[in-house]
Length: 85
Image (cartoon, rainbow, N blue to C red; front, top):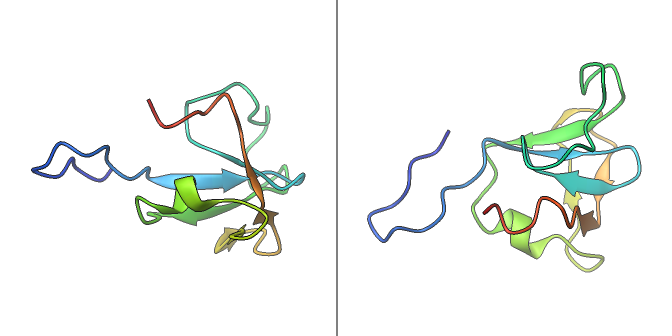
């Protein structure tokens, strides 16, 4: 996982998961993940996203998966995953 910067900023997540319903999730931050592998369940994901990517996900700034199901597009963030805190 990415390290914290000298400024103490929150590190970027290792990946952002994108569900078949277009919802973005962070690893280990909620219980909405499938009981089988994300790949088997048809999820997509972005590996080593920029720190700002999570905060920018919206209808206006969708995030498209680069791994797994690359047709998955997140237009909303899981509210339980919050702000990575």
